[in-house]
Image (cartoon, rainbow, N blue to C red; front, side, top):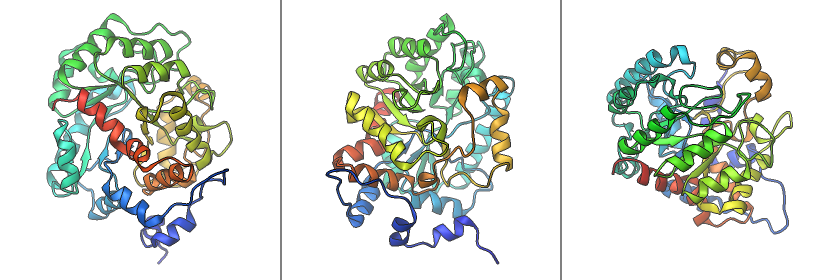
Length: 374
């Protein structure tokens, strides 16, 4: 019987994995990486992926949790519900119900992150922590009471807009950039009050600046990249990144091919360049990981159902603006070992273990400490 991709990868040794996945290109003064020390660093790290589609459900298997454990991840922040406005309210309620049922059924493997202290508990108990998030605020509509409802159901991070305009503000693909509405200002303030992390990963330029200014707590760019390296509407300018850093926020670097470079297929080195850029621009305290992929990687080939479903959320105009193309992933990090691969790449570029620990999760942990209830 032919083995699946997952079974093949799961059976590979550490040495084989190093050989299988592309290493970073040689650079002057590049460091060799001690693989045993790297393993120890991953094991000891709090690893937070601020957009990672790992959603335990009622039918989740032990194998799925084994893959999660092998990855080293501590906290996954998955998207709950649809980003399509017409579907978002009902789909969010349905997905939260399934998520809570799945967590309750598999409580020895996974736990919900409702407050900051839950992060350390998840690490100590070797469980994967799930911090439920929205990638659009349309589930709230224009009723702030719905924020109380979703907070009670476990939502702890909300992206104010997706690509298009909603009641809160303008997304990154809108023709104009008007920023936060009055309702948007009220929503940000109530999120601060309740203890919900403000995310502007997909937001337009002025909406991003407004949210940074209005929020009295650090916010996040959960999953985006640097406009200076890849001129794409989903990416952030130097001024936006500097404004985020000045308020103590963190930018999660996305593994999405389209946001990393204009090349048909971006490489690991293209991805690592974004980490280096943010570090050089504002320091290593303001960058983390927001892979924007399933923990196990992107399955299948061009034309598979998941790809078709993904394209369904974009209008034709959005597809053109976002330069949608196959493949969406970067091969070197299209698997559950992405955190180790990124850490190895950063170490080989001369970054210290302390810096790598910050990027793997300590930076997001700091924001979570300030934004969530203790």
